[in-house]
Amino acid sequence: MKNIDKCDCKIIHEEIVQGLKEKLAADRVLGDLSEFFKTIGDPTRIKILWALNQKELCVCDVAALLQMKQSAISHQLRILRQAGLVKNRKEGKVVYYSLQDEHVQAIFNLGMEHNAELRSEKDGSKH
Image (spheres, rainbow, N blue to C red):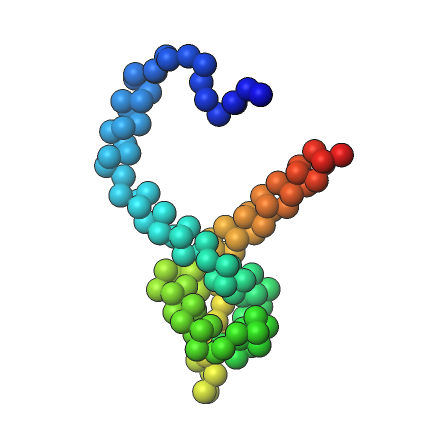
């Protein structure tokens, strides 16, 4: 079986590689982006993001939905808020959470769409 992830030649495109090296070394944004994806990579946090993508919810609602302790949900929401993925608002004694903005919603929805396509491809290749 042939490995399609590996080149069969030793050609290096020096100009392309050098140009990208210069950009990569100067680009600290990639480190921030890596942290962003680490934050959303947690299974509990992705479930919270899914729920908040549906509707604004209070901590108690999220805890009931995910069948977890409120303190555990509060901890995860704090991480998401500090990462700029969710925002909150207080109404009386209740704190409601929602996605930070349309960027977070778009990233989440694109991830869901991409995942659905991958699943569809895998299901189609099994037949």
